[in-house]
Image 1 (tube, rainbow, N blue to C red):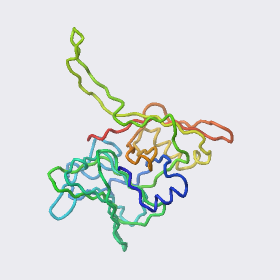
Image 2: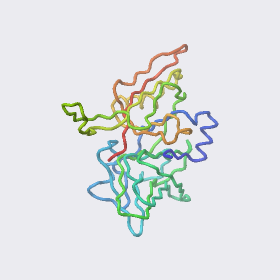
Image 3: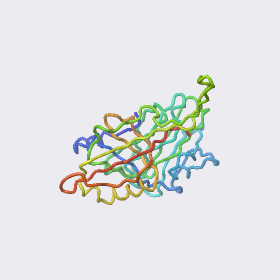
Image 4: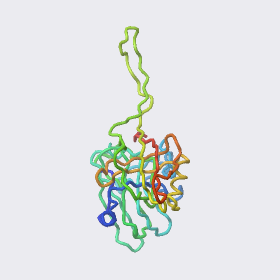
Length: 280
């Protein structure tokens, strides 16, 4: 599982009928000055978590007295609904225990254990009216501490839930579907060998009959600008049924341009995306 939803948030979504609606995470409140790694490594600073890019990463270390952690410390108590992390190597750590720990001031520390199966992004979803904490951390302990934990992207902020579900026509990648190779073939047409040049995945999501009030909202307009500028975001197409299908994505191809698809100005959108494969 790579999406962890608190029972309170799950109850909200089911009451609204949106538990399986797609969501995006784009409006990141993390800044270089508020990113923190416990037992930091100076050559791979915590500020790298705030760039939104996947090639540069932050690294932490385990110690005898404290766990490794990737965190946001806003400076003052701040309510943050959703936390997410991508470009990590947590699944490589024997005996790993990953917790989302939220703490202070004047509040009982909140801890949730999150299963980690692979290198795919990890998302923590909380109620729309969360408590205000001063520190939010992906906290790691392991039985074998020889492998330094690392991560490329840390997100902290609100989620944007789309008001319609995705049905037919969307092809979630189960394995990488955009693989560029170089092959050597002999004069006798025998394969001598192949080398993978680039590996990743792409997908296109088409959603029709969106209410014009949603497409014209500030939240959607902000995401549309973010998407069209080619900046990264987290994407989940059916989060309750397939919590493992969450991706760190960016624009691939055409800009996002809503179009009228029905009466009463109902609108459709088409998002062409490239997905990060998880290696750092």
